[in-house]
Length: 112
Length: 123
Image: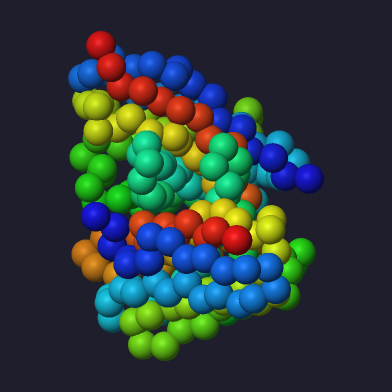
């Protein structure tokens, strides 16, 4: 069972927008902005698309945006494209006796 | 262009030690701003952070693996390594190495990943 909760799947049509949620606690998402989102096509290296909850690394399409409210972070993909079909994972720094990184269980995005 | 490549045996016997190496190309593992992590993905499941190491030797490990885990850096070969002892079938996974440190998130966001290597624990 993953520390962060994501929907197992979402879907959308080309051109539409979708949002993937990632829910944690005040010990992780709620307490820090060290929230990242990764796109992972199985068999390939994961790709960082959002860090710092809302920062987009150089080279990442502006169609990807991140936000955070309370204990929930969100990834929004606007203008869906066929190539956006992939698995998406959130991660967050988590405080405690030993700081660690926790991931969500992943969300499968299907572009219909 | 920075490239990370995992290497190691694809099959490990139960109770033995899993050893993997990540070779870094196009960057210096001794860059003090960088942190080097391992992440794994169990078959059909999500990602799990294993831990990270800084070239100076600082480490942070997933508490659930800490008692079995060692990480090291070889600056002469521009490599970092993972050793996980007393493995069981539950350690069967794809293991990724990754680079952190270049975002405001410090070691907690990974901008470069390897392709991953499958490790099966079985007799």
